[in-house]
Length: 258
Image (cartoon, rainbow, N blue to C red):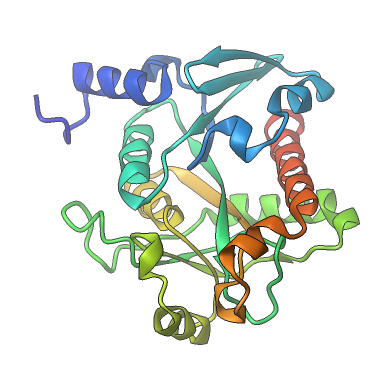
């Protein structure tokens, strides 16, 4: 069995191992984060109940329903390599039509503040994990229609929080310590607003396999502004949690009411 050629029993095994669900049972829409769902969205079951949604737990995933609409909320793993495996499996599931990413990244745009949101139309690919499968110049772009819809919804949902919702270029690096000041400064000069270790992998694979994808990045720290990581992750902590709750509310609105 060649695991990289996902079909038949190999795909069934991989999907069940990673997401707890077989490919033929996958819904059309998947919401994925590098971390566990409850870590991404604090009090996630309460958010679902507040929106009159039913759900079932499947391993670390949530299969969420409302009438005939279904969506899977799941964990993809931290880091480009782990997230590439999860994204690769999703892109081989025929039922899956769109993938929404929610994660936290560093803000490097000059006008970006902690707890802001970036909804990137495209990514600079520095992840280095797809070189066997895709050439470095392969595009990593969001579906433009999905990107616009999510931006409008998140702007509306988060309007009371006093944060900015950006629509700027994003960059994905292979690991945390690759975020040197020189690299980040060079990326800032190229117009990059935020940086993480996962999103470009999803965009590139989704583009290659014909899936719709869009990402929502909540800004955690501000590495170029000299704010220590521990401080920037702790300051305005309640606001950051509120932002992720608003992101969850916006995604639910998109998936189940539009």
